[in-house]
Amino acid sequence: MSKYKAISYTRLSYTNEKDNESNSISNQKMLIRDFVKKHSDIEIVSEKVDDGYTGVLFARVR
Image 1 (cartoon, rainbow, N blue to C red):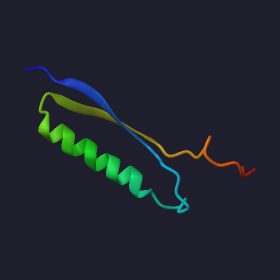
Image 2 (cartoon, one colour):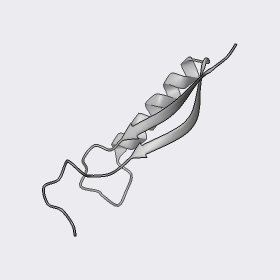
Image 3 (cartoon, one colour):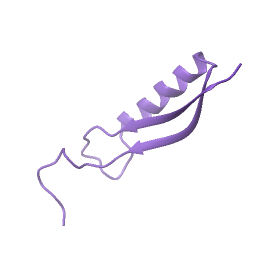
C-alpha cells in the first residue's frame, strides 16, 4: 500500500513567553502525531513550525 506524503505544519498562537515554545505548538504536534498513528496511509516527511509573531503584535522590535 502506498502512503500519502505529508508535511506537519504548526503555527504559533500569541504567548507572552517568547523564549519558550508555546503550549500551542506542543499541543499541535501531539495532535498531528496522534492523527498519523491512526492513519497508517500517511507518512510525515517534513515538519514546518511557524513561530513568528508578525501580524499579531502592534509593538515592533527594531
